[in-house]
Image: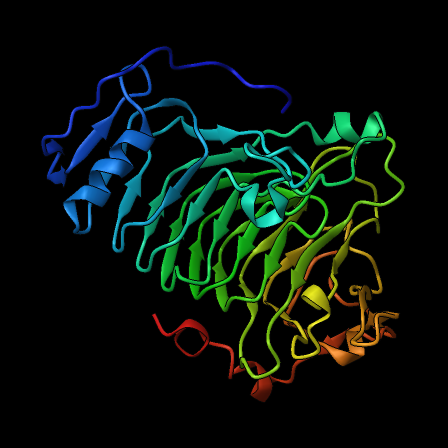
Length: 335
């Protein structure tokens, strides 16, 4: 997606009184033609208690942070939250947004639930790549911050290119479609992905088609990014054997980060490379360039199937039945 659509104009009103859709009660019902999600979140912060917000269909062109513990954000068919900021985009007051700051929607409170939302970072990644201005092209759609313990993302769509979904806290992601290219599911949080569609995007004239996961899991943390019964798919045009399952990310050269990603009973289409995993560079404590390689990290599969699943004769690490039993939702994230 390129560019933006202006959907709201002027100061718009927001109905705050509790309203009902069927049997459900809402603290705010927001129509993008008459209100903003930002205004609803501001009212929720003033209330000082968990809020329930229903978003009607339409486009919310807003860059937002959720700071209300226990908040529920419920979409309707066709509800889109969109913004177009990248890591290298200039920030008001000077500097640039950076990767974490680029997110369209940031969760910065515990116990937040997102349901049936389409969240897009509409930064023109393809245009920046075409014009040679791709430095700083990381553009996050959804960021779950370290303070956002026990976040739930249910039946949503997350759309970007590089660094689509940044997860830094315990999270449950169910029935969600996550679309991107380079390291598009990444971070150090313990996250359980269940029955999700993980879709690699087509980029014109690309020589390779990226990496699905880039975990930066601390070595002392037992669980990282766990994909259970998910489907690894591709857009039209993504060729055979063009995409890595992932690479371990030693963020900031932190030697305590080893990275863990596990694929359990997942379907993998033919775009996944035979080797599966690859290395990622970082600077060591001495400032010298180094590589964190797959054998040094915790990168595993169990019961994967499809043309991209681990073939015989590769070095991809396969869990035994006994080892795989350790990976359950209750153990990984505790909820």
